[in-house]
Image (cartoon, rainbow over all chains, first blue to last red; front, side, top):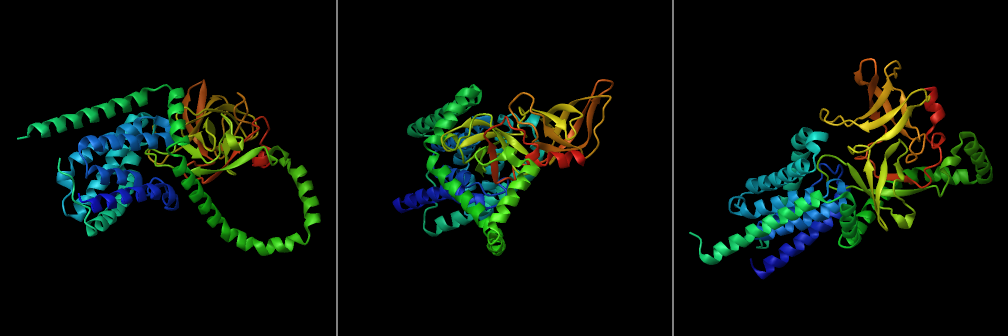
Length: 165
Length: 282
């Protein structure tokens, strides 16, 4: 990626982190509002090696665990796997196709939520089906919408070419 | 075919991934105390500016929401201010009549709820008030509707509360007329959208009418008596000849609250503050 592209990506990720804490509270139900933090992770992962994706995922997951410590470690595990898979899947998903990219973001949210629910033991004690079939897809959709918009902006300024593995 | 440097890089990626997985599993297996230490450390350092940003955002949101109401009531307030001394005296009389002394200023602290992304529902909530505001461990967290949970972790400017939806939540309770007592716990493993509580341990010979209000009883010393937990929906299960359990529709929903009160003197009876007399008559 060009230096300009790297700078643009860094600014975008910083912006998404700020959006997570500064704008997300305004976007209604937290079960549906886009997850800017995960989006930042996915955008980083698809431009990185799988190891870096996993490491970034672990860091993001640890931070989310600190904010919702009901099942400390579940977020770290979920984001690690998501970051790693995203980095591996870039060859497939980083196609020049809006629908494919949207599907990638949606799947990222869904997989992350699935792992969190399983790892935190809510399969026995909660309502996993409801969350996996309704809330997670809705959150995935809103995240995908934002993700596609971000990608279009990055593409316009020439910061979308992924690093080769 | 991968070249040697590519193979080495792929091996390094796999090692990092496995290391992160192992660290995540270690975090999952940490004792509760250690988890709290790590999570609290992150909240006090890396996350501090981000949480401050969210706190300001939540505050702005609440202020914006209230602005309309304030504007609407401003004219009334101006008019009412003309009769301030009389109103003050009348207010004192009314407070005595309603026995609202239990919730006098200083006995509670208001806190914004900093909602986070939580797959599976809010088992815990992050509050924008901590030890600096007087919040202590096990302090009850309430809204005007009823109990939301209890504080389980306290930092300087934030705290974490375990909501009633948490599988480990328990509260001793009684019906509004204090005729029946039991333990209230969250219902687990029910159908989608059914975030309910359950009143357990009601003697089989007694029955609780649908709609009966259920309040905290104060037994155990953690939760003060008189906080609404919810209202009875119906029988959930029964052990013939022994006891019945009842579904309870929760009074307050953690996922929808944006502002809560943290009770600082949990010894006081909060029944009058929540209109216990009225509930009992219903």
